[in-house]
Image 1 (cartoon, rainbow, N blue to C red):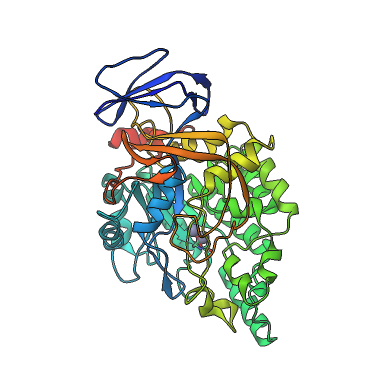
Image 2: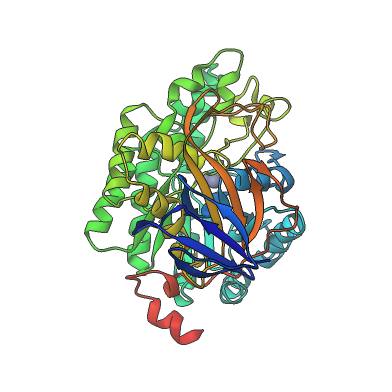
Length: 473
Ligand SMILES: NC(=O)NCCC(=O)O
Ligand SMILES: [Zn+2]
Ligand SMILES: [Zn+2]
């Protein structure tokens, strides 16, 4: 059925204006003042913002990690929907010894029929050899144009620098984008062993064993390798000032380096890891939370374009039975926290209403640029005629307080517990279908579809591989 969203204030990365939106067959078919259509269901958005559905380029749903498995699609995709996110790009992982395609297949099977929202996958490369390299062009053709490499997690996911080099080289040929977790895994491994030898087993030592220098060094190294290859690179979850500065310098040299930070690096600090009764484990993620001085540096880096996106890095474990695996040895605490549900409201409350960014910048960081970099634009990430009708009606005046009890994510705690929020997601539409009504989920699992994403070069500006990618498609 057609839908007519009337009286709202449309916000894109470029504009804020009042207009009605007509939706038909899942697409936006008209944007104008005083639209009418006798066949359409009318939804009033008076006094509210109409935003594009948010894009989260960094999630780990139902993923084996740290000896356990993260929360499933059936809860986390609903949490994303209720938080105003209509598409996630989740990290599938290659099992060493198996193909990249096998990793993608496993993730597709888990998500199929279980997702409330649209989704795509990156493939995490853990075991690169000649056959794996040959898979990269095929994966790009199949809508997987992003690869992820871990420079940390020694003995598990960590790759050699030569693997980063060869992956960048292969990716560049087909307009794919390589993403890196930049931390020096070998030095972390050594520092972890030293802590444990000294009887330092508590969650706080997770941060002690991963000082910012290990992130800064790996960030510089990844940029240098990408520069030698002449390939673009996306650095995930930048946690503080010095790595952001390395990225700023690289951009100033004209290198195609892109990067994101995450809500927890903007709002939480290392102090959380000192909470008693092992509760610090709830805040163990990598890179670790930093001192509050880094918050301002990250806001500045978002403001001046050093960082282009804010992904949640949602990698959700329960405290009971999961985070508890690391009692007596912080290295066994599964790394990761939540954020899929609160990203938009946190950024609106503590970014927009505090004057740290405009609402248009927020839309750019949470939707438009992620859509472009991830090959989803212009179908997603903006409000325009012809785009998917992924829309969020957002009431900027309503308030609430975050609590794991009222959240949709299936967790027994929330990293943002007790945060006061101004601005609430009221209604969400996924390709025209209403999936959230008056802040409650009304969709059906399986509404979400796998998204065939385009090669990076086709969607994004200023990349040397654009012409080649275009020629090959
Ligand atoms: N970030 C984190 O602690 N867990 C998720 C996996 C990763 O992104 O490194
Ligand atoms: Zn990571
Ligand atoms: Zn992650």
